[in-house]
Image (cartoon, rainbow, N blue to C red; front, side):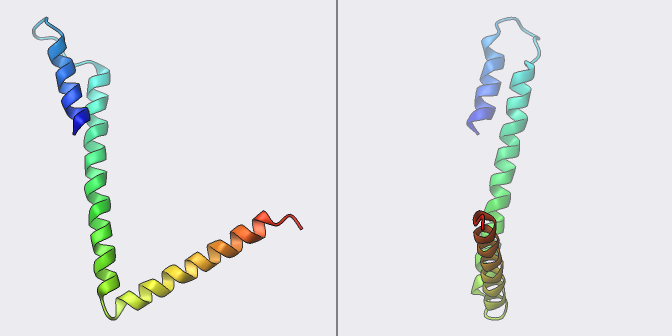
Length: 84
């Protein structure tokens, strides 16, 4: 949100009327909006994850899947880190 405010304020710095926003200001607005959208997306995914974990049927299945993936990753990292 601060990025959007700063980009709009950068337009106000130029005293000549009718001057368009600079490219950096436009890029700042776009990146700030993208960051806000991604924040809401990840928050929604986290809420969905916790709702799924609290489900009596899907919760244990998801927990088992996460544990299996975690074990596979641990095995791969231990094998790749061992030179012998």
